[in-house]
Image (cartoon, rainbow, N blue to C red; front, side, top):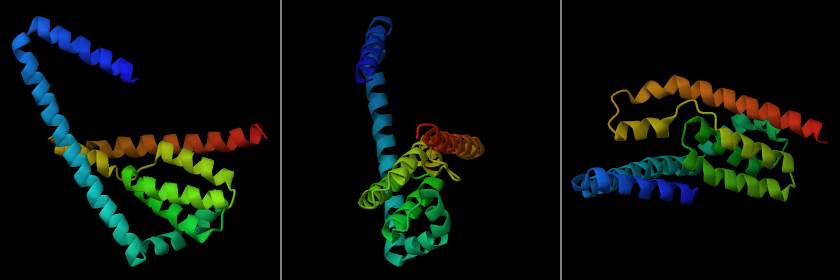
Length: 183
């Protein structure tokens, strides 16, 4: 994939150099400036969400969320490991809020706990759910759109909710059906 992007970049640069050589440097600088701004915006978004996630852990909110989601998590992931259930609850909560970057550390911790229990089912299911990432509030995308100057950053809300709900539901159904077929 890197090769493809590199070829596209150099081909574009060559075309601009031939058709509008006076715009080449300004285009490169403008792109670099927008990339740096977007990276800084993402950094700020993740810093806020990671801070809130840490605060949720320290205040006991994550344990409360784990307790509230425990019956559902226990049923879906087939585990009674309290540390795994807490990390699963926080991972699901972060994904539902659209902050996948903050969800990743909780998924890694949950996988570690599930490995101790040798719970392959839950590990694979967690991977499937994280890959499709159902989002009630796509906060990262909304923040990126706002940072990019979108006048209607929240227009992504309903399409995102529908797409992620359908993709997660379909992925879980296919995962469960595939496990039954290939046994």
